Image 1 (tube, one colour):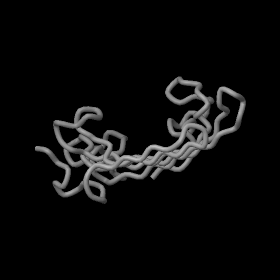
Image 2 (cartoon, one colour; image 1 turned 135 degrees about the vertical axis):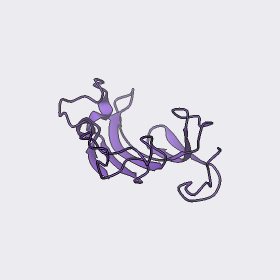
Image 3 (tube, one colour; image 1 turned 180 degrees about the horizontal axis):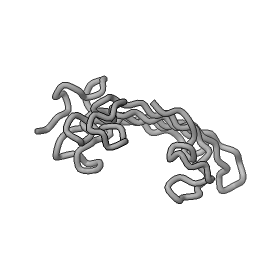
Length: 131
């Protein structure tokens, strides 16, 4: 689990996220994942946490982002975004092997978007796997 800001998610507190200085770098980010996404162990001794049983992520991840911004007219706005990402095999639309199976985006300035594929859950045990 990670609980912090976009800025602190790369472990470098420099007011950026991946070099980007967008307004969201101070927004609150909560990430939760399965051991098949990113393990809490270093089984192969490379000094990094393992990515799944064979070196590739095959689990699930949820991201929750909470933030504020000022719209084009100078009005303060608030948003929340929740996303569920799961491994689906070789036919994924996200990074080639993953899909977003649920997203709930609520924005006081831009409205809301809700999407969900299939049934509730995190898509484990071949439920979403395509190969």
